[in-house]
Image 1 (cartoon, rainbow, N blue to C red):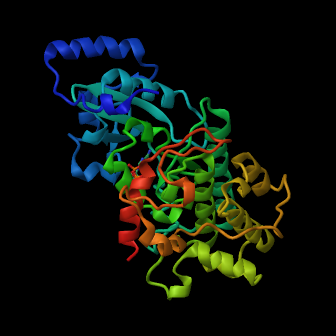
Image 2: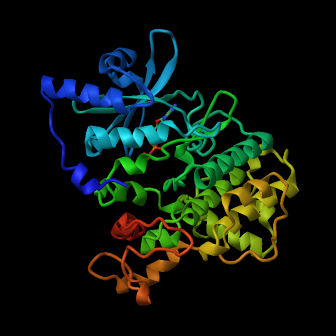
Image 3: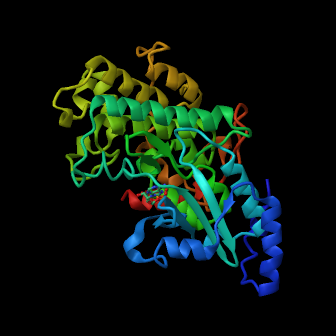
Length: 385
Ligand SMILES: Nc1ncnc2c1ncn2[C@@H]1O[C@H](COP(=O)(O)OP(=O)(O)OP(=O)(O)O)[C@@H](O)[C@H]1O
């Protein structure tokens, strides 16, 4: 993998001569469609605010309509992502090769001068965060069948990234706003592979991760251990959200109900899990299956990473092809419990935890580790005050 700290220092504007050079470089490397900047400008009405459909950690997203009538989601990457052309294209090539029905399709990109823009297939029904969890702002209704389909689809997409793509991809940011829905409510995971377009030590990413703490596996947030099991934890939280129809954290609820995972664990222990199922379905759901999905969510969020199932196992359990061992679910990892350790934070902003101090520890079975999540520590706990 390229040395990002070197690459990201290469921010500059390009002369006409350099642009021609870049053009040649681009056509030599790129295996996906290349959009001229002019075309994207036209498709979005000069990036008009009325076409803005969202803004995330990577930049602003516009809806674009091309001359042939097709639509695209046009993601203008923020200044932080302006790495060198060759490196950028290497990553884009990798993302472009990944195709799966439950992953958002990358249609192409634009690399001209300082512009770094990605063009994705447009998804009509927005994200799960805005629809299912939108707090009543959306009029969309999600039946049990639709929810089952969404859970299984997301699980298949993630299993594909984890187990079939070589080298394996850890998404790092599985959450409701990264699950987009097409016109038939089929789910597609977005933003996979994008974390690699940004350097690991950038505050941008820290802020972004800190903003989604409810999905963060404790070992990732506290010790920076990023393995596939961290994604599986996030998926577990998402699963609970889909079945219960509520966000993982809701501070408007009474204290005992604010944290979904904590509540799910308590309900599991008192054998009242069914109380968590979204009442907006009016009782029209398969009670046994809904409880099974909640239990799978709890299996995925167990505190000890190695106890969490793999994503392919999760797919099988959701589809009823593998039994769910629901008698042996252990306690979930709850980030809130680490606040007790707050006083033991060292100068690097990390928790001292015996010999596990430092952000670069790696797991023996999973070989991907990063340190940036450790830097979210301050933000996480400052926010939780
Ligand atoms: N392919 C797409 N089709 C339709 N809408 C999209 C598409 N991609 C993104 N959007 C919209 O743009 C919004 C912002 O997307 P983006 O992935 O940049 O940020 P996010 O997921 O909200 O936050 P973060 O970057 O922190 O993950 C999404 O919530 C969605 O509403």
